[in-house]
Length: 492
Ligand code: GLN
Image (cartoon, rainbow, N blue to C red; front, side, top):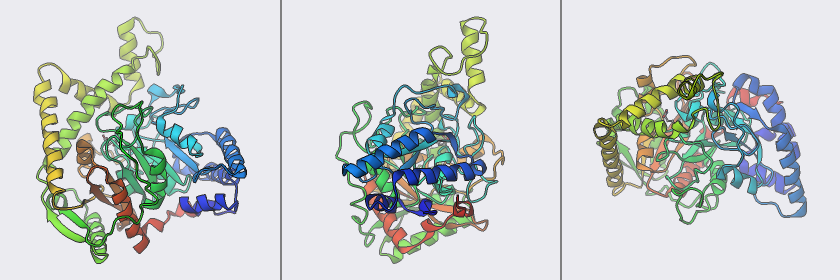
């Protein structure tokens, strides 16, 4: 079969179960496409062809023996922030260019246990800091819809790899929008789970109180399959929650859109930088949901203006602490010929980290320093609580909250936004992380340049099933999620 990359995850599970094709055939097909197409997209940092074929053969063996699971033999790409035993895990940084992880992240281990075949590791902004994937040490990944545009970030490789049909689905992480914004820029569906739903063990830390892994795929249905693998308590992550996991696939029709109260925050649709096309597509999608029976309710989220300053204190503060472990001593990059220990620290860190990471270490260290701690960090924590309360109050009168995933569509590569301009682009996603809530982004059309637009739905705690279900039903009634970038049409 020449079009295996066109199949949805459900179709792949069915095809494998019915022996229409083997995991080896499927894996070889994807590897061939990667070889042909990825030179243009540059989504992979590392392709693990040999290991993938061995995993595929093992999967086929399980199929023959009748002991396969649902996803046994389905390929996946992992964001290069998840530790993979024996395989480089770079986090997009020169600092970790030589880091071969001695263990698997829980998410990766769970994938292996489910029989997933790892095609490789995909590109990202350095240490997940950014919105374009351009800050990667390995260079920019291209948006499959327009190769001179960014795929978003920080999980830009995860988005590009799926949008170019170079993997059926991918893992991503979201500290302030890094699943939802690239999903939106690349016409995909991406779910940021409730904080604590997915283990962070072995996921290289950016801002630990905000980081959360999640699935990125073409549809809510495909995301549900991956969520079934990723979700769950993990004793190795003290912030992962001991709470029953839903069967996200079985629940895809579990929430009725009829009667669903969707909150429309007034403040969100008056943001200065909101592009007209984005606003129009999002409003059209809400109209569609209304036709399907949802009730649109105007709500207030009064803390909107505080989102960007609060996040850009807390995230860098935590990052500056997390990144202090990269000192050139234990592992990671070490400068040549250090004169003494101070020289070793200084040069290893200034040569190993790129400019955006250094900027955040400086901001975070400043905010945490004696004398400024109360004025910046403690204050930001207090405002964080108010932001959370603002959401909880809204959820007293609505079931989900609608927003654009991002104020614009994908930027041009090299657009050179100032840091503040870039940070303002995170306005719709970062509050969700500050509050620890789940949210999903789904494609709802295109702008005048044929670049995808994403609708975001924010849910109350642990409402992943509900979010997937609402988007699934929207996707049954529309076909935006079936549109493919031209490059994805190319056969290997
Ligand atoms: N763009 C945001 C930042 O740079 C979010 C990144 C993320 O979610 N990892 O911090």
